[in-house]
Image (tube, rainbow, N blue to C red; front, side):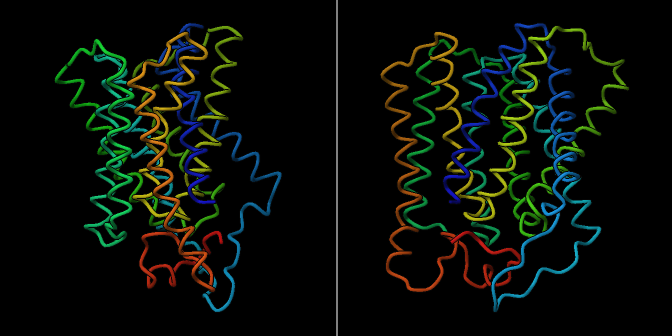
Length: 326
């Protein structure tokens, strides 16, 4: 289920670009989009936690693994900081870059983060650089490159590229820090804290810059709700669920499915048709998904005990307070 969760997350995130274009055409400004996106997501998740108290509890792992301890203030502050610093900063850098450069080139620069996450996770000792993971990473990066370069006509802006790479680095740190707390909090609680932190930062920025225009019509609110529910709440929840089960590098590699989804949806809704080069790139990205899934499946068939997430040290998994999906 871990890879499937990551793919669903990538699909939901991939739809956000199309929703965003439709929202812009309905009169929504980028600052308003960001503030309303995170504000609505935080409100929906908080309401969900109030209506479903069971979602606030972390399920106990099966014996003989130890039960999770009490959630500390440090864990809560880290979760809030993920949104207030990490998510808000990444979104700000991304949309600042989008104002200066072509969206396809921006995505090309931004999607260096799977490589950064994999290298950082290996250096930190959180993941192993297996041959299967290397092959999946190369296929995913090459496929993403073909998908994005297939658009053609890219304009290069040095400052825009620097902002885009800053967004990539910020998102890399966000994933790695998330991996340290994702096992300690229930997914809905963690997601609500992240969205609340991001909303706080964006609300402060709004007050300091004189506010945002929320006078757009019903169509604009419709697309904002789609962004908040599909591309924020569902996307983030499934990403955290997938991250818990696969580890940071595998989750990042599978996230390269996102630009493929974006390109396909743009072809269906915005008449931006796929080229043969883009189709070849999409197949490469899909092949990386198969490579990532194949080794855990084979291991599960050979072993008699419960399967641990691919690429994560056994000692680390034994200390996890939340069990991975079997």
